Structures are given as C-alpha cells and as structure tokens.
Length: 194
Image 1 (cartoon, rainbow, N blue to C red):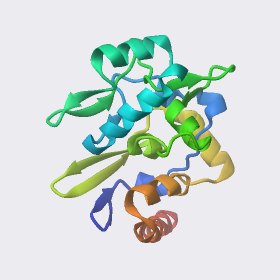
Image 2: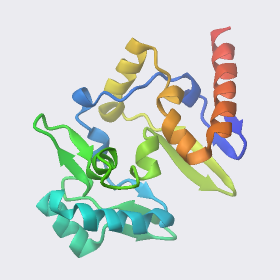
Image 3: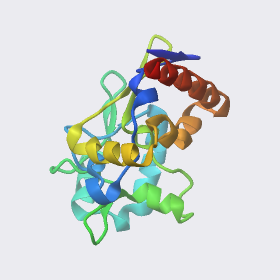
Image 4: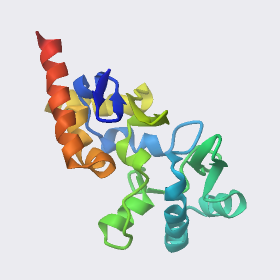
C-alpha cells in the first residue's frame, strides 16, 4: 500500500500500465456491471441538471428509467449510484455508429454545452475509491472484460495507470497531491525493478 496524505492506494495503481482503448472495449465500463457508477451526495444535483439539459439526447429507455426511478438511486447508508436501464447501461450512455458507448455529460462538456465533465468515479475508473474513517482507499478494479484492452494498450505504449489518470487525480486531490503521488509511484516502481 502507498499512503499519500490522507489517501491509501494499492501499489498496483503505481505499477500497472493502462490507457483506455475505446475502439476495442466499446465503452464497456458504461454498459457492463451489476450497478450504476457510484456518486457522492454533492454530485446528485449536478446529475439531475445534466439529465434535464441532455434528456433529448438520451435513449428513450434511459429517460423512462430516470423518470420512474430517479436519475440516482440509493441513500446515505448504502451509497448513491447512477440509474441504469435493464441491460445494465448507464442512463447517460450515448452510442456512436460503431457501437462505442460514451457519456452524454462528457460529450456536452467537451462541446462547451455543460460545465461539469462527469462523476469523479467515472473519471477515475478503473480506480475505485472508498472513504473510511477519514481516509480515501483507492484500488485498481481490474475486470478482464472491461480492462484488458486498456491494459494491453498501456503495455504497448508504456503508459502507467498513474499517468493515464493524471487529470482525474488532479481534479480530485489537486496538483500538489498528484506530484507527491508521482514521487511515491516512482519509489514503488524502483523497488519493484531492483
């Protein structure tokens, strides 16, 4: 384990190589799973606003689910997650002509139509956070059907997971934390290579 300030991270976050490969995985992290992406209570109003603003661009089944069950499900005890349609697909999924799933919120953000990129849990994936007793615990959630194409690309191109997640980690913890995190990653990698 690596500790950087109040964050405890699994060492494989420092040593794994990973870079999303959407053309190969087709955005599987947005469509496969037994639950929606975890979100914080603070993100719920932004997600509801995104739904209202992007509703006309979403799958009709996604609209039905969001209107019947809510954009977000859960509670403060069990946690909150974005609603999904029956197939497991996030309600914010859009698919291109090649069948690649992307996030409607993120697309709108890139097009300057929405001011927020996407939930932090989505931005950090395949790293998952749990907050326990004042600490964030970060683990690399390797699921072969979701992550193998990204791991292959990372290996082929020499991209570490820690580097791939730079923007999302800075968004979550800030640049000073990220610089300290990179130092810790280099120490772990040097220890692995000795």
